[in-house]
Length: 170
Image (cartoon, rainbow, N blue to C red; front, top):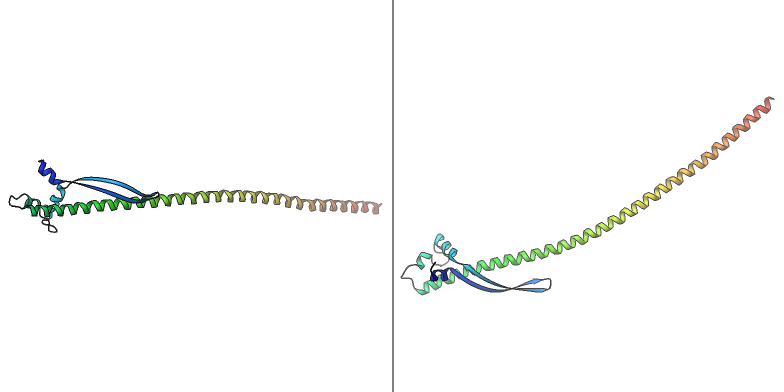
């Protein structure tokens, strides 16, 4: 590529971008060198766009510098729009990443709290189960006691009747 053609198809831009962050603002210096030949190709493919001249018009020998300047301005505007669109997309992505990170931290805190609560509920459930088992044991013990007493009393009564029946038959 010739130096003049290269100069015509490359454009350098320098930007200072300030984006909000957790510490205030992040400052980023962005130097962009863009090959602009694709813009001329797009203009050539689509015909004359938005008052921009196609590449073949720029190569004609009788074109004046004003027309070339207009074409360059138009190309620069397209480039600036493309860079701005890219920067806004990057800014939106960074913002979305920050939102997702905050959401993740919030969800992790919530999971930790729920995990602790589940552990407390398990301990409470185990204690309640142990108390229930103890109460069942006590109830079974108390139920057997009156039955033992009743069995003892019945056997005593039967013995007395049996001894009365024997003493009355003598």
